Length: 71
Image (tube, rainbow, N blue to C red; front, top):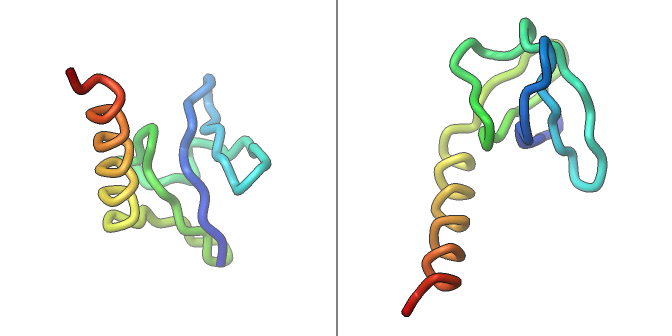
């Protein structure tokens, strides 16, 4: 089992970041609701969205943005 984060979509592919590497995954293989920033879990042929990890990551990014732009 491995995890990756959707960085962006390009045509029929999602560009997924795995630690220090990027990999193109066909969008048709992903859950239909998959979006940029979602954390994906790859378990054999099954790909799911880790909703808890995605929410945690989004909150961390939001907190960092708040710190950057805090007046």
